[in-house]
Length: 494
Ligand SMILES: Cc1cc2nc3c(=O)[nH]c(=O)nc-3n(C[C@H](O)[C@H](O)[C@H](O)COP(=O)(O)OP(=O)(O)OC[C@H]3O[C@@H](n4cnc5c(N)ncnc54)[C@H](O)[C@@H]3O)c2cc1C
Image (cartoon, rainbow, N blue to C red; front, side, top):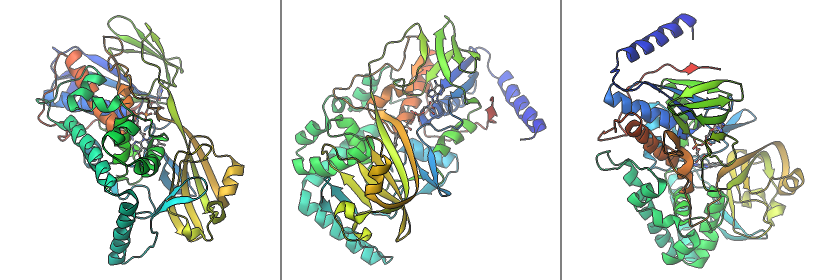
């Protein structure tokens, strides 16, 4: 951007603020973290203040990395871009859909597979205990036939339990939709427990998924195979996760999943661009101290910032922010997921098969000790002998192991994610308000479930808390999915 244009934008921006109602306290809201949680807080604060037409505040956002997006990130293999972290969105993720429209992003369907309905194989470490048909054709009626045959195969193995699983997921999804109700109908929640109880979701966090599915009448076979495959792919964990995390994970295996062309991280960057945020990239916050009427945030660059409101939009479990006075949150372990991306070709011998074409496009696994990976999926079929794969595992995949699974590898990229909470029912939740003042924690909600959408839903509630608790102006709008009218310039303070 040319300097003159920048000055004009900053001037227009300050002019619009100087004309605003000065009866509200001017404040700086500092947000630590530029993932979907932090960027959504910024977005909703601007959305709610434009509807009030007078709230005056600056937003500073700190991101320790050189790019925004957090766990929404892409990886580049031989010049092609794939989702490295959060990859799929559910058709009922209404905030994500709304962001996509608002920001003019393009939807990509299906999200992460090489074909619309990838063949599935359930691997127990020695053999495939279940396989769907992998026949590919460009003819729609053949595709329909294959899909029909696969439904029959599923039904023959798991029977009516499949319908019970579907009902279990739909009930949870239906309850979650309450979070999109208008502000008149939906309270501002001061705690995660209150928020979950209001939607009828709290009880699902008190028992593990295995127990919940037994109560719902599912057969042990379905739980131990298909359900376990899905929880291992989506949360790297077993049926021991909470019922709610499990329901969310199963919803992530439904039809109609989507993602954003070019990368889901664009939701974060777009929201930040549209929310008049002073973005401090590559600046890590190392301490947050309450000074009475404001917080002092200190960064590893030696800078100090004064903020009337501070928002932590990152899991605190593995970051080293010092709080003064100390804050108290329950101990939580993050589940590490190792995402390994390989361009090459799987070795059919590893799976006891003759040809690579016999290997399902999605190899899921059940809970068997020492099984070295959770899933292997084809991201892209370049040709019959050249594919890009994504492997999820609980431990790193070393070269020797990869060499036994692959016939050859042209490129390998490994990412170790502190991915999501290690779920442990009954879940204990950190507070949304960390100090009874104006220090907020978006990721307290991650113990319910960790997704892009749940972060956005939590962020919306945090923005409402700030509007009502700091500005004394609870936002009331009939729809928080409404259009955003702010057109702020992005400021980057490096
Ligand atoms: C491998 C993987 C697969 C996933 N798959 C899906 C999926 O398919 N669908 C889905 O919906 N969800 C998925 N998730 C979960 C999803 O990514 C998260 O729930 C969501 O992105 C969390 O967003 P957030 O903004 O709350 O946190 P984050 O995205 O983690 O953002 C926090 C940001 O804060 C920054 N930060 C941390 N500490 C500091 C500091 N001290 N100073 C400054 N900056 C700091 C971090 O660098 C980071 O950018 C997946 C996650 C992983 C890891």
